[in-house]
Image (cartoon, rainbow, N blue to C red; front, top):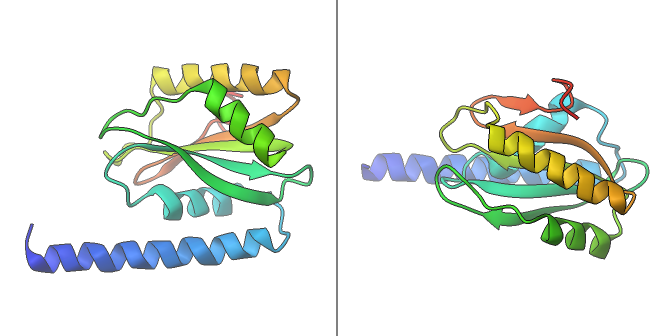
Length: 153
């Protein structure tokens, strides 16, 4: 990687971080996460620059307003271990009423794997036991895929 490319990547990451801060500020001020495209863009800004898989939660109140964005698990270039117990613990600590699950695919291909679909079901089952709604699972790469939009939830 040339110095120019490193500098360019650094600048792009700074822009993405700033864009994510702006979007987070809008949501924290009380806007509900009701626009799927804006939600996907927010997640892409937060997770899109990582070179490793990162699994995160958007923790929402009962009005679907963002309470907190939390990165829970950091993995390798093509996988991240996700533990339902830790997800439930985090959700209960924040007292969230609903969540949006999110992770990135550093390869750029946002197509969910079978493992992604299985962990989504496990998390949905675990969170249902504590009365927390899973509104979506969004996978970001060059594009983004919404489990809710595909009817997988």
